[in-house]
Image (cartoon, rainbow, N blue to C red):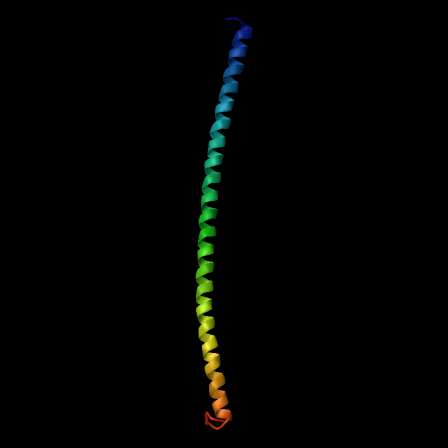
Length: 87
């Protein structure tokens, strides 16, 4: 094997090793991106669930508050008329 062939073989081997390192690094990056993407999706799912829960609870509280306001209005009207519901 001549000097040129040895150089070519060494260059080919170095190129192959470089490609293997790049491929391994690419897989590591892809796995990291997949992990981050999954984490972001879980956070978004939690926030959406939390939002729905809060909206539901606030709706229930709003209904209770509205009912209490109506009762207060009714009681204020009764007090203003001297307690007689006919007036």
